[in-house]
Length: 442
Image 1 (cartoon, rainbow, N blue to C red):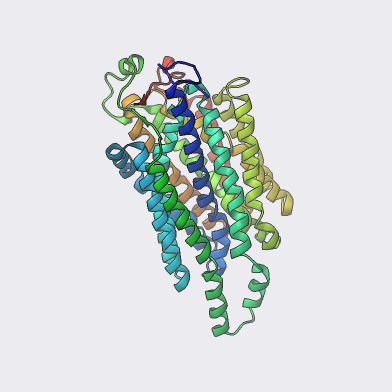
Image 2: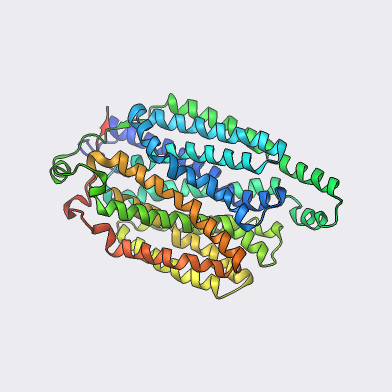
C-alpha cells in the first residue's frame, strides 16, 4: 500500500490503516459500478427483442445510461462540495437504487421509455459515485503508481462486469433463440403475451439490486471512509496555480476529457455491442450472451499486467500508447474478418482498453490542485462518450453493416494515441507530474 504524504511508513500508522480500509471500500464500490454497468450488454439484445426495436433504438440503452454522466457530472461536483466524498457516495448509491426500482413498472408495462428513464437515473447515481471515487483512488497515494491503484479498482469493476452478463443473460435471454423464431409465426395476441412475459423476467433481479444498493448506501454512510481535502494544495502546486482562475486554463485536462470521452465510447461499444454483433454474424444468442464476459476477461488480464508492471517496468504514459496501437490493430482485424474471428477481435479490444482509463485519469488531473473536484467532474462528463459513440455505431450498423460500422473505432484510438504521445504534457509544468498533492483529512 502506498504511503500518504506527510505520514509515517509504519504499518501501525493510523493514516496508513485508513488508506487501506478506504481502498477496500472503494474496491467494493467499483464492483457495484461494474455489475450495474455491464448488465447493459444483455439489456440491449433483451430489450431489442422484448420491445421490438431496431439497432439504433436498442442502443438508446447505452445512450440513456451514459448521457446521465454528461448531464449530471457538474451537479455531482456541487453535491460533493456540500456533502464531502463519503456522504456523496452514499447518496449516489441511493439514487442508483431508485433507478433500479423504476425497472419494475417498466417491466410490468413493457414500456421502453420507462426502461430508459430507469437507466438514466442509475447513471445519475453512478455519476455521483464516479465523481467521488476516481479522484479519491488517484489521490490516495503517489501519482506515479496511480495507474496501479486504478488497475486494482478496474479488476473489481470488470470481475463484476464479467459476472453480470452471465447472471442476467441466464435469466433474461433464456431460450431467446427459440422465442425469437416462434414470434415470427405467432398470432398477434399470443405474441403480445409472450413479450410481456419476457419483459417480466427482469423484475426479480432488479428487486435484488435495489435491496443490495440500499444496504450498501447505509454501510458507506456509517463507514470509517476518510475524507480527502482537495481544497488545499502543497506549495509546489499552489505556486504553479497562482495565476489560474478557471479549469479552462489546464489544456492537458481538456484534452484528457476528450480522450476519456473517446475511450469510454470505444470501451462501451466493444462490451455492449459484442452480443448483438455475434448474433448478426449468425451465432446463436445462447452462445453470444457470453461474449461480453470474454471482453471483460481481456480487460482483467490487462489490469493484472498494469498492477505488475506499472511503474516498475513501464510508465503509465507508455501503457497508454501501446494500448492505443493495439486498439487500432484489433479494430482493423474485426473489420476485415467475419464470424467468430471478427468477434474475437472485438473481445480483444478488452485487452487494448484495459489500461486506458487507469493511465488517462492521473495524467489528466495532474497538477489541478484546488481545481481537482471540478476537473474530475469534467472527466466524469466525458463518460458521455459511452452514450454517443455506441449510438453512432447503431446508426452506421443500420445504414451499412454491423461489421463495417466498427470503422468508427479507428480514429478514436488514433486520438488516444496522440494524447499518450503529446497531449497529456500540453500546458503542464513537468515537476507536478509525479507528485501527490492532497492529504487525507482527519
